[in-house]
Amino acid sequence: KAFDALLSYHEKAHAAGGDLLGSEERVHVTIVLKKVPSKASPKPIRLPLAHPLWSLDCDMCLFMKTEDKPWVKELLMESKPVPGLKKVITLDKLRTSYARFERRRELISTYDLFLADDRILPMLCKTLGKTFFSRKKQPVPVRIRRGALPQTIQRARDSTYLVLGGGNNVSVCIGNTSMTRKQLVENLLAATNEAVDHIPRKWANVQAIYIKSDSSVALPVLNKLPFVLAAADQERQQTQAEENSGKTGEHSAPVKKKQKKQAGAVPDAADSEELPRPGEKKKKSKAVASSSKQKAPTAQAGKKRRSTR
View 1 (cartoon, helix red, strand yellow):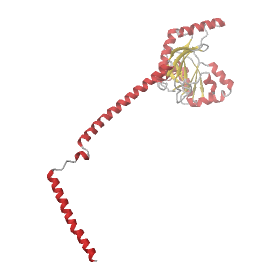
View 2 (cartoon, helix red, strand yellow):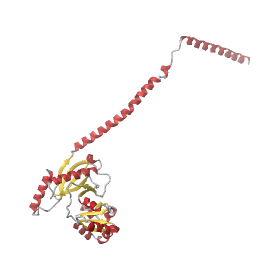
View 3 (tube, one colour):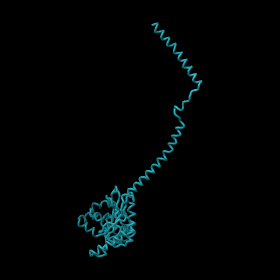
View 4 (cartoon, helix red, strand yellow):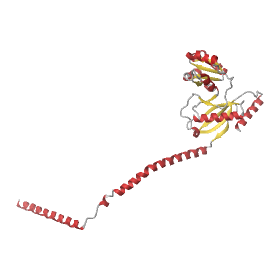
């Protein structure tokens, strides 16, 4: 229903504005996150689609190192040409010939997709400027290898890309308004499942999913209510607490049994004392009497010595 409403809005809006129905707009899926990712990265993550985002006649531009340009240009444009690859620009030429803002703006509007050697990708952020990133045309990283370079370029052309920024939502382009409803739904499922795998905590961190075109409002596809999220967190915490209590109970039970056994095996000192037998009592009394008799003469001897002095 969301895609039906989106496509019908696009047709009515362009018909009312007098534009041709063939003018295309990009369709995006927006994933709202519950918690912001701790690490933001400007590097695009490739997401395969069921139906290619770009057609074979799209214009692509490749940024690469200066020393690799001769064999790359010969391979991709003469030996095994890739449809859509129109331009190969080295990093040195990008820094000199496209240093002015007007030249970079012209470069952005000329090509649909930009690719870059993954070895020079960190150096392109400052060279290209923020205009490429604000218009969502940051270069897609590709690995430059002689064997499978044409196939790598084709996979990059037929995929979409995810960028994890510093906000609580991410946007991925999944198609355009010239596609059918079925194609958009299949691309939505493929891109969403792949994107969630790269999000921290995966589906537990997804709060809502919307779709929108370049000129439309966001239409909800999935929306988790706050009390549903709270209940899910509470249930997760409860299960963790039960698991932890079960583990501690298993460890503490044998200790208690050992303590009981030890308490039964080693009695208290008061309990261990046995009552003396009658015969022992008499012997004890006789011993005390004899000791008192021995002390008595010593006391009398001491008195006599004092008196003689």
